Image (cartoon, rainbow, N blue to C red):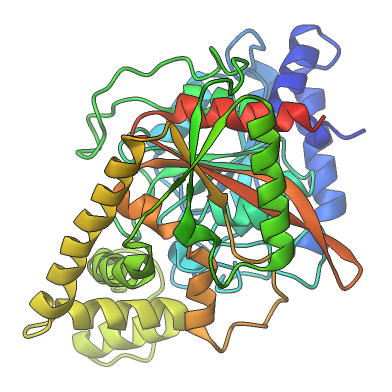
Length: 475
């Protein structure tokens, strides 16, 4: 049995009981990656030497002592490539510093193992927009693993990592967790520092754990959460022990079912799995309450105005002047900007920069960007009203299981709709978790379905508790 098949909690027990040394644990995961990743393509870079050197110094008594963690290729790890799966940075950029989450992981004893593939600059829902390689779903290699954190989800679900970090701008942790079959947690905006995360949309991005269980997600969140003076959006709030009380069950909790998330568009097999999960939680003592999130229909449009506007500003730094790819065909500065970006960026990144620049341009700002910000407030208010009635919200994570590679690449709108149940949480800044809740049979393959739990701001403890209760009931 490979160490990569273990949970964090299980590996902790073996390391502390001296059944395994940290070096043996790291080597076992490296062996799993080297033998299995060619078929999946989860990693863009495996930092073998640094990981094994870190294992020699590991202290298993630390909270994550000796635990190897895969890290999405948009989070800086000093001395490792950080390409954001883009040709504009590929072979051109090695991180000169650690992101705050990386520092915190190392302080907790964890060992960064390598970089996981993603949609370029986190722009996508399938990891097909990577400029590096294709990542495949561990349950069916002809299908996508979700995105943009598809490399992280495929590594965890495919037993090529004990756990991983991803980032979530509109569902990029929860959606691939659902489609690949693992647990993904998007913390409240500001709960985890974004310092050292290459920005896509600064008011939406959030780093979070991708794990095999909600218990593991709590252990990782314990390590990476907390205020950071390097991040002006980081919240100066106390960080509880998210593992404490995770076994409390769901007795007496009120869970809201938003009627807008169970209407047209959800595939019957997905609905059946989610409704079965809801009955499970009801059987454990939770009270199920129908609620309404009336501005749900506007979430996708609002998200793609705000996110692309912020992306057009954030990606202006990739100009061929300071770092990254520089076109050799340019004869003047303006040509350098244009040719560098044309050669370096993929189609989806170009599409979003163009859209974002358009909605911010003179004459269109009020009609699009300003209006989108007003609708964002309405969406946030919907959640505030709902949380006056319930302790958490329960829904599908995605409307359908993983689709085939190439199936939606020519239809951006269809691709965007894969995030229809996840984007609103980012617009509202609340926390969300996806946990596996069954599977559907498609063309002879069993494809995972995700159950989404949305929580009040700073109340990750409750959704982790619900996720753990559901997972424990299915052991």
